[in-house]
Image (cartoon, rainbow, N blue to C red; front, side):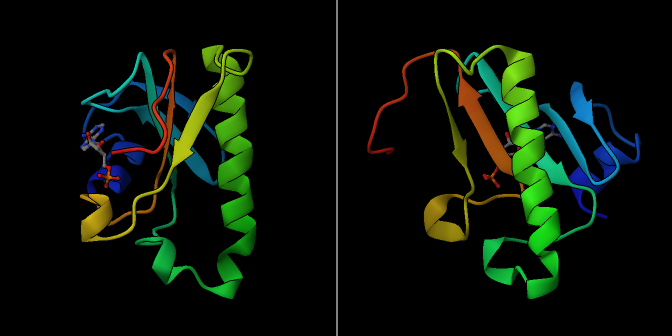
Length: 112
Ligand code: AMP
């Protein structure tokens, strides 16, 4: 099991802020902004480069969950960023697809 599957199964603790049938969202353990939540599909897709045609609905559900978390966290009016890291150059460290939701402060562009 991936570390995120273990969080979804309540085998390891996390600050869970949202859950539905297909997705779960919890606060990043090393937050990079006042709001830093990871939105994760319960079914494992390793990374963006591994998405298959049959994953299209699940990917849409991830975005729907992301906007729900953004509203819940109160960052829609001020702005927020969604980030998905793929592979070494992007700094991917957990091989279980996840969207970073970052907000609560101005975010530089381009990212580092
Ligand atoms: P990435 O580098 O895009 O693969 O992002 C992985 C993220 O997972 C990092 O921001 C980590 O801080 C975060 N992370 C790793 N383990 C945990 C955990 N047990 N609970 C919450 N966040 C975690």
